[in-house]
Amino acid sequence: MKETKSDQINILYKFVFHEQITVAFEVKINYETLLIENDVAHINNEWTKLKNFKCPNCPLDETKTEYCPLARNLAGVLEFFNTLPSYKEAKVSVETNDRTTYKQTTVQVGVGSLIGIIMASSGCPVIGVLRPLVRFHLPFASLEETEYRVFSTYVFAQYFKFITGGEPDWDLMKLKTAYEQIQVVNTNIVKKLSDVELNDTSRNAVVTLSSFAEYIIFNLEDKEYIHLKDVFNSFGESSNSGSIFKNE
Image 1 (cartoon, rainbow, N blue to C red):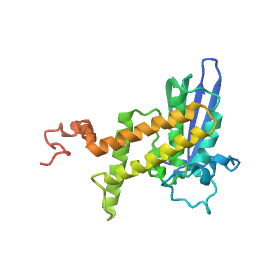
Image 2: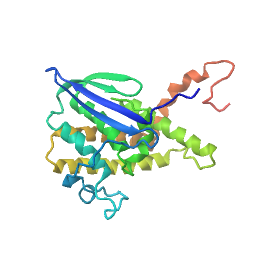
Image 3: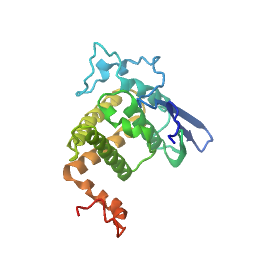
Image 4: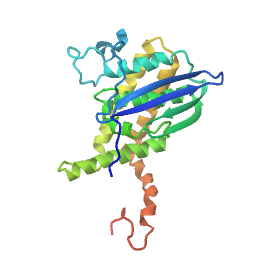
């Protein structure tokens, strides 16, 4: 039986500090489109306008789009956490439709995980290629976990292209190109946020996300992702079936 799903993905990031102060920020995402549905119509900061925040590789037309969707969606969370230093410790919980995840960490790590979700679901036409990852958000993901999720999700997408008559990108070259474009956006965000009088939490969070993207690009260039093949060794343990990952 197919599981009934809500039409909205609700993700609540809650920060509890030693002083027993709690702050929380909720992200509402459409289940089908994977686009953020938080109301940002009231946000009209000058720096969020497309003409001021536009990335070098942005395909949006300034005459038709007044505000950068990424900047406008980031503005709320950046201002919300602006008074909290990046190094401050907190117990961060992430409540989703299915489970709650906890981690004792810094504001920077928690906000970085939150910003990553907002960036992917913001409507940015460049970072939007990462929207499939939003459906199965993994808070506080490590480099290796991020690498695994990105590669496996992308290869699964190529399988769907294959069975529907499309041309799959089995060598992952288009993924490398996509991440190179994402890095252009990350670099622009860090630069633009440096011009806005906010604390270092947001910039440091984006820098961390940028380093993750750089790691993905490096592994794609040098085929370093091959080490993940060891994860699938258990598929070959059956003496009857052999390994589904070997040419036999």
